[in-house]
Image 1 (cartoon, rainbow, N blue to C red):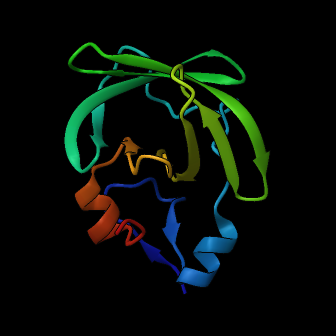
Image 2 (image 1 turned 135 degrees about the vertical axis):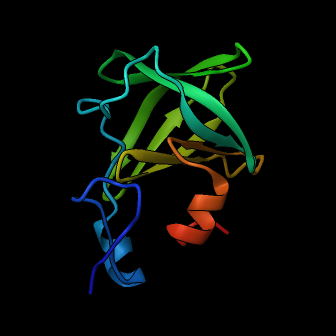
Image 3 (image 1 turned 90 degrees about the vertical axis):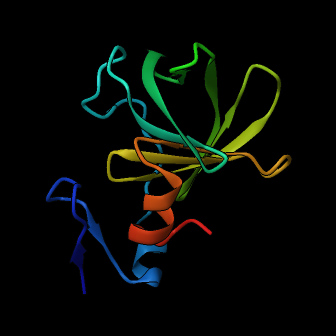
Length: 131
């Protein structure tokens, strides 16, 4: 059974947990969200909301620029099934999943989490996929 999520495109639906896990897609840099590099959207870094923008310097990289001026470029390492793995400039490894026009990146080594085009509150309360 599908449920529409307020504020998301009509094609984005939330399925039961089992179907959600089965339907997670790779973070596909070849088909970026409609947000241009100069547009800032609500994002989250370790549960703190801060605006950010995303750009795609090449098909295997993306850059996140935070409203405070910090920016990092992530390079695709591998992708398999519903998981893609990215590397930051300091060697950190990030596991990514896409959710509608949003992306959740998790660095398991240090516990950091980035949510592009979404907040921790939305991820936990509306999407019900963050803890």
